[in-house]
Figure 1 (cartoon, rainbow, N blue to C red):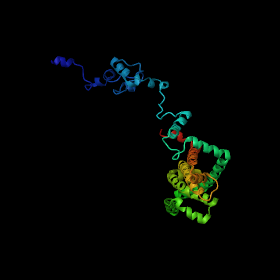
Figure 2 (figure 1 turned 180 degrees about the vertical axis):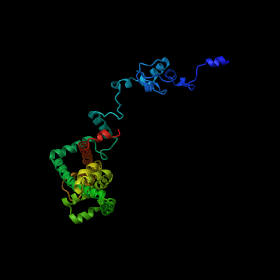
Figure 3 (figure 1 turned 60 degrees about the horizontal axis):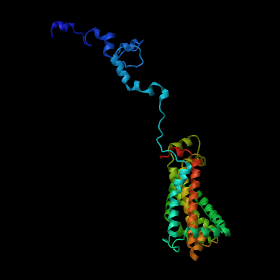
Figure 4 (figure 1 turned 60 degrees about the vertical axis):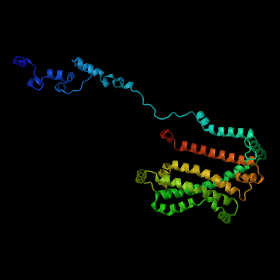
Amino acid sequence: MTLEGVAQAPPTPTEGPAAASPAAASSAAAPPIAGSPAVTSSAAAPPIATSPAITSSATASRIAASPIAASPAAASPGGLEPPRYLGSPRRRPAVSTAVRGAVPLLLVAAWWYGTGSGAISPDVLAGPGAVLGALGELIATGQLGDYLLASARRAGLGVLAGGGIGLLLGVVAGLSALGEELIDPTMQMKRAVPFLALVPLFISWFGVEETFKVVLIAVAAVGPMYAYSYLGVRGVDRKTVEAARGVGLTGPRLALGVVIPTALPNILMALRICLSVSLTGLIAAEQIGATEGIGYLVTLAQQYYRSDYMVLCILIYAVLGLLIDLAIRGVERLAMPWRGQVAAR
């Protein structure tokens, strides 16, 4: 290259005062924004697609191809798409009920087929027809209603007494370190002792009347209620308790207003288990010195070897367990409506 060519070559952006001129800055960097002298002197100004002062076609093409300019959602707020629901859609009540009853209905169909085809002997397992006949006999004589009311009264009193004591002990042990030291060791020892082992002792104390039956059911229910209540209270956020104490809630007001509502899921689960365990205690209690009740009916069926009544009693207990579960679910929906929105399914 000759000296003349070098002399005629345009200066680089770093040579001389010409590098700071607005024309050189606009050609080497992004186009300026109209009406803004501070931006025109900056070589790093970001491009804006709506600026009327864009003179470079290459820069305009780059802006048109940018994601911001090409996104219709960014251009107009009304074009934003609503967020997708990440959870699974809730089934309709009829569909949910059909799904829940599918497995029990299949078991009943298999039972019906096995006894009807002769694959299962009637001496081993009575068929559905014989069980329905036994149910009709109890309904016709009026004994079914009397037996159910007697069993429900005993189970209700026992669960009310045992569940109330277990809830009180669980709250005290969960809130107080001294209460935990005094109560928890004794309750852990009590949980390790099967309540059926206490039957001879309770008979010697209370006889075979109604007191014995209610006390046995209460002892069976106090363990699960204490364990779940204790875990629920210990799971309450400490900051929540401190905030409640800061506004003056102490003692029973703190327990009833903050602690128990927060631990309500564990308490309802404990109630469900207590009601199920009470049925076991009910059978043991009504087989001794009873003249009515479902447990008494089981004893009669065993003495006379009536397999149809045995199966009927099993079905009655199964239906009672299902009704208990449905009742607890209804209480959960009424007392904790927000749990349906935070469930991980």
